[in-house]
Length: 232
Image: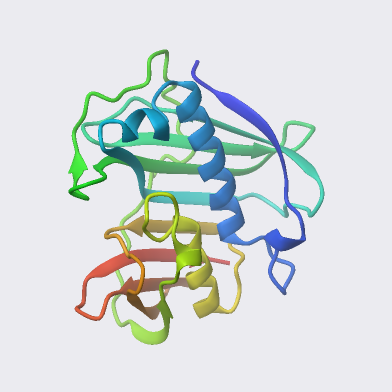
């Protein structure tokens, strides 16, 4: 099976002032091992950019099954599932030294043309046996805000950008944490709908539904950049 495992430890910078593990720290871990695995499978950044292509994250969801402790070593594993059209599902698991599952995540990645900034159906694929195991039977649900109220604004700076010259997905998670006043979550889900780039002003909206908070980021023209659902 196509799988990669690495040890991971979360330090002080990965926790907020309330002692909660930041959602962005989780996403940073997933992003790092996904990039490393793609490189090992011959479909990493260097290979794709030769044809003006890049990987972009379309959606992600994770659940934490207990408290992840500062300074403790965990095992982070990832593997791809068979691609569906232009979508490349990839899952992640975090386990402690005894093998107990501390967190699980699922994500969907796509290939985008670096020049046109449009998604592409491509011949990119993973060679080898993919697993059919899924962390959540329900997958990643749709997010629908009903009565959002503006709760903040973020102007994109250089520090928000990644190698693809758009806002990194981890930074969106921090924006969500700024709106909610906490960066922790037992269940976190985010859909990425449009790029934001240097100088953009992202208007942040909040809505509460059934014990969950929904945070939406939009440009001034109404274009939705992302939507996130957070359960504490």
